[in-house]
Image (cartoon, rainbow over all chains, first blue to last red; front, side, top):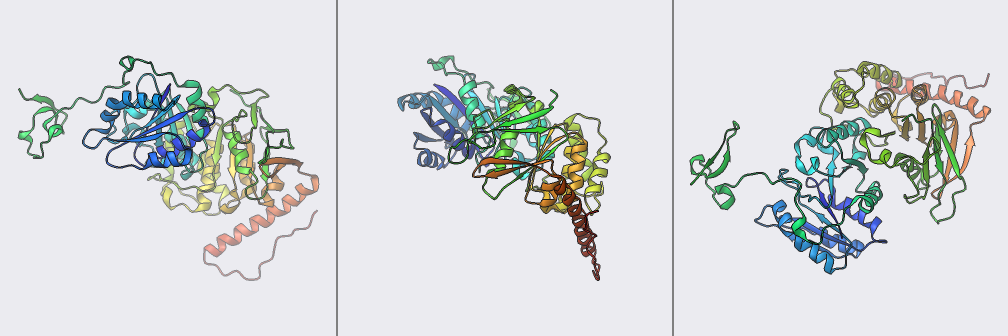
Amino acid sequence: MKLVIVSGTPGSGKTAVVIHTLENLVDDHDVAYLKVDCLDTEDHEIVEERLGVPAKAGLAKDMCPDHFTAYNLERAVRWAEEEGADVLFVETAGLCLRCSPYVDACLGVCVADVTLGPKSPAKVGPFLSTADVVCVNKGDLVSQAERDVFIKKITEVNPDCKVIETNGLTGTGCELLAELVEKECPEIPTDMRDVRLREKAPLCVCTLCVGETRVASDLHRGVLRRIDGFMEYRGE
Amino acid sequence: MEVKKLTVLGGRDKDGNPEPVRELELKRGTVTAVVGPTGSGKSALLRDIEVLARGDTVTGRKVLVNGELPPEDLRFNPRRRLVAHVTQTMGFLADCTVAEFLEAHVEAEGTDVDPYDVLEVANRLTGEPIHPDMHMTELSGGQSRALMVADVAVIGDRPVVLLDEIENAGIKKHEALDELTSHDKIVVVVTHDPVIALRADVRVVMRNGAMTEIIRTSRSEREAAKLLEKVDDWLLELRERVREGERIEGVEPPEVTTA
């Protein structure tokens, strides 16, 4: 089975790009779709209704949504196998920009919203810099020059990625993404123990992670980083 | 890679019938107009050219580069993009001045073009002067179009330029086309405007998703185009005078008889 992991900032058009890409795949493939979100989502219902493919949602609730994705990837793969799928799309919530949800044996797709401006590629971190394919979305809203600058900034953080200009409203460009899914996406190993994340999650386990709500700095323990850059471990 | 020409090989119309025009050749330094009613497939044709279709788009067309199916890499490698697209709707998000904007683009393209050359070209295309210290967001539609046409002509080193209906822009259209062809571009322009359609070397007629005919611009059409250019310049000038708050009295249309 092929695994496609799609990330991107909220509102960048991930679901729209995925739907149009699936439309290009459903004739020749059995696809399944998993949406990971934080508190609520209806994307899986939209996908199921529009395309009639097995679709499911996972809500991370109190857990970090990217960690939740990594932890549940094996379950997702098993579910898609049970559904008889040969391609599984996992769409992530993509929020704090510090994790990359891609594993080694997947096609990592980042949907980048060009309206976030030319500084955004440097800011969004590993889900862009470790992607295989970057879909530059909403390009119709800006000028050619701004698209050029934006794409240049993408290649500065991810020199080897493939770039597709997509339009989530009309679906243009998504046929090219479908083609890359068919040609470039590796098969996921049967033993999930052989599958690794491309990028380590940032190191930070602190008392806030386990429920501290007070802000006074002397009450905090764990791996802590100060605004001036000083980092320390405080604890036992 | 040096692009000398593109060839569009016909696919199928919206009903799946073979496209009447089997081959459309696009050469450097030429302008090809795409005409046809709304929904006839003009944008899809531009799109096929932009993505270098290889029978995998909805139209089934193929686009050859220098007579050959281009390598896959040309489609996905951001460093090797062949096509610049000046679209119909164009806003700027850039929170900066015209000079800063052009400098950022020059830097991104890695060329040593002088941004002021772009400005000079842009100011030839629009009646409303653009100053380097103007803010991008305060440019009018005409100024934006002029700046973007100048930008793709001068800064971008893409051999192919696609223009989507520049007629509504309030710029000197024929000079915009001249500027692009003088930079030896392959220019494809979707248009309903006779000034542009007759200025083109050929025009492709679209119907029901298909290229149905290629019309080579005749000598008398070229003559007509020259007259239309005069009318167009006249209208543009009036437009600027109205904008300046002038009273327009006793206007005479330009001489529009053939020599």
